Amino acid sequence: MISVFQQHWQELLVGFGNTLLCSVIALFFSLIIGSTFAIFEVLPSRFLHILGRVYIEVFRNIPLLVIGMFFYAVVPQYVVSINGFTAGTIGLTLYTSAFIAETVRAGIQAVDEGQMEGARANGLTFMQAMWQIVLPQAFRYVIPPLGNQFINMVKNSSVLAFVAGFDLMYQGDLIASTTFDTFNTYIAVGILYLIITLPLSYYMRYLEKKMG
Amino acid sequence: MKRLRNILVLVCLSLVMVTLSACTNKKSSQQNAWQRAESSKTITWGVKADTRLFGLMDIKSGQIQGFDIDMAKAITKKVLGKDGHAKFVQVTSKTRIPLLKNQNIDAIIATMTITPDREKIVDFSKIYFAAGQSLLVKRGSTIKNVRDLNKAGTTVLAVKGSTSAVNIKKYAPQAKVLELEDYAQAFTALKSGQGEALTTDNGILFGIASENPTYHVVGGTFTKEPYGIAFDKGQGEMRSKVNAALAEMRKDGTYQKLLQKWFGNVAGFDLKEASQQ
Image (cartoon, rainbow over all chains, first blue to last red; front, side, top):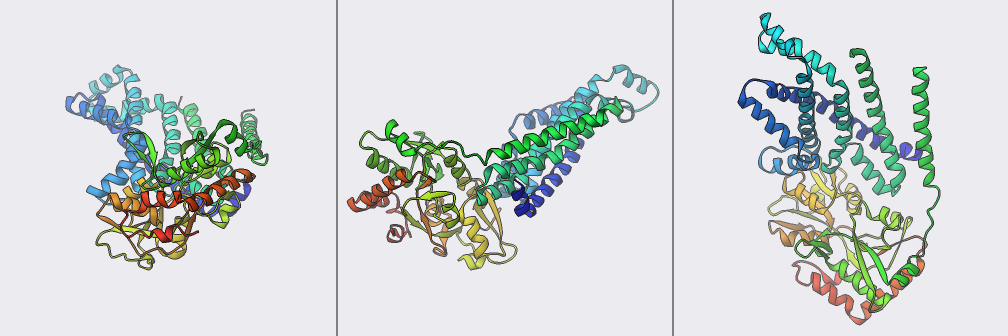
């Protein structure tokens, strides 16, 4: 296993970097998109409510691999040419955002209705009340499930391996198939994933303690 | 106290890792594949199911069909007698060696090139098909041969774990190489413009081109890719039986008949070249 690191650290480093980059981009955008659709779901507007529902149900119920392949193979043929990394990251972002939307919606609905009513009675607009009063409380409730989503997202970034996105799993596949040392290569890849997910997991736990 | 517990968890984790990696050093008890085949009257072959002409899943019948499949069936009958049964397990370039090593399959007959690197890991039979690497491009493409690919900004598609992925980096070091899971995916990537050319052995490319007339094979072959049947190390008995069967098939014409059946109608394919020994 050590020898895999010694001989292939460059490839593994590239893979590690791409996995990390993809995860950070997907985390940022899926949090924004997910929260937006979560708010759509609790808005009084019927149109936005249905829009949010459709978005969430579509992306939550299609396998990530299918979404990724769609952006890799179909979108470049008819719309715009994008490479494997971009296609995989877009797929991962949309897929994860659907789960985050569900999580955040649950958080918003867990906040007592009186909070919103009180804020509105004090002259805040709906968006002000949502942004300043309800959402901060909602996020506190959902930190544990949100942490789960983030960790799942890092692991799901391995979908990039199937669309030639040069991530950790892709590099692992290549190393395994050139050295034939399947076992040690995937152990090494597993350890590198742990290096990303373990600190994330600990940080989410820390946040949970601090906010709770 | 908290910190101590965290450290303890980490120590346990690393212990698990070390134990796991120690497992590889111990060779799992290897069975004699030939004895097993003889008593069960079955040989389990690892074959491709995504490669037209060699091994392709026929969606209607659910059977894999192709030159490799027919070869495997004929060899099984030769070595085990009339009641010999060939069982097929789907493999890809990436999974075939691990599957052979953990004894899920007895032999690989899956468009596998004999290379010195692979010979360190597995044993090969005699050559049963002499292929060569070539290029598949869209009709009208400016790429005519492998030299046209060797410039920055071109992207070549290949399949993970294949020799063609390694070779193309040698013949066109300036081109970027994207490696996909299997030929179906690699061709999908070519169609969606993820690369300018798809590279692998000519037989496989002719198979793809025969179904997709807007694509064609260009540049002839620029490497020699002799296909062999692979066995795990230490299965010499099985290998010599199969070699004998191969020689017999070449002599009695079974081999030529199969080659003619699958490649006789492929335009531009050189049957003589493929049957070299």
